[in-house]
Amino acid sequence: MAQPLDFLLVSICLFHSLFGFQVEDYYAPTIESLIRNPETEDGVCVFPFLYRSEIFYDCVNFNLKHKWCSLNKTFQGYWKYCALSDYAPCAFPFWYRHMIYWDCTEDGEMFGKKWCSLTPNYNKDQVWKYCI
Image (cartoon, rainbow, N blue to C red; front, side, top):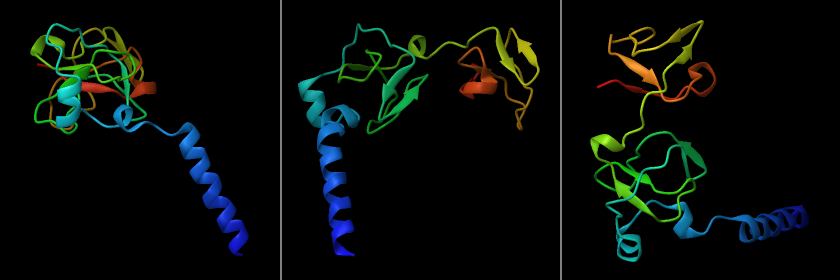
């Protein structure tokens, strides 16, 4: 029984060493990465961007007090804090359930707040935000 378990552990370690993420690619900006790659104030947020093996369609709030965005399609350490103009725009028109919406809607929202999709097909992607 020990041999299959040993083989499994060795296989996992080998796979992780060959295909695993590098630490600086996987984690959010930290104090150490801020010193190496400080915020780029004049950069432009790129949406969607890949970070921690997930796709983000808007500014994120990992490891920092304020929301930030990546300046690359795949996060490579270049980032900036989000200003109001940096947040991802609504995708109009967008498809929700069996209707196409050209403006923010309250449909399907439990508390009556207006929202919009960040992609043209909410039914498929289910990515949204509240409208300001």
